[in-house]
Length: 139
Image 1 (cartoon, rainbow, N blue to C red):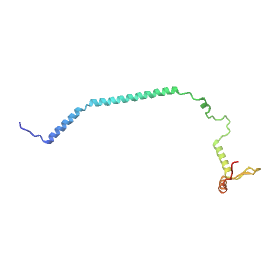
Image 2 (image 1 turned 30 degrees about the vertical axis):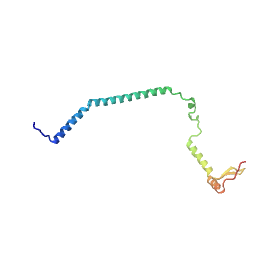
Image 3 (image 1 turned 180 degrees about the vertical axis):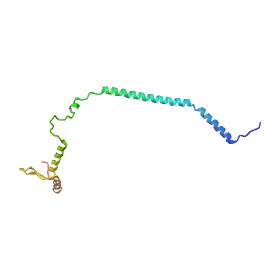
Image 4 (image 1 turned 135 degrees about the vertical axis):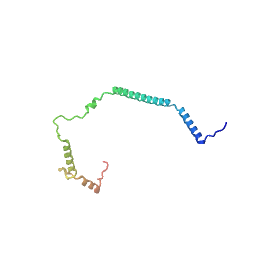
């Protein structure tokens, strides 16, 4: 028999085609899709079981909750009975702060008969810096 030589490119193509066919035969597409479907079904089942457990947990936990304490109900903030003395609490607070600010920044008598007066807070701080604290010891 005469020997026929096959060109190298044709031989290479034949081997590549044969390898691809062998590789495709090794892969079973039906098994791969079956495995993917099984994973999806198991994942869905796990999610459903966890959801059911959470619903059951919430139901049983709500049944175990204790009744609220009567002390908590007694300490609820309630409005005072009518007639209410302050019609505008924010304005009353502003007036109080203005009055306190005036006391802190002005001179005046606390008790004139005993000679006790008040001085502005800034002046009191300056005097303390200049003179220091009075020396006092244990009595």
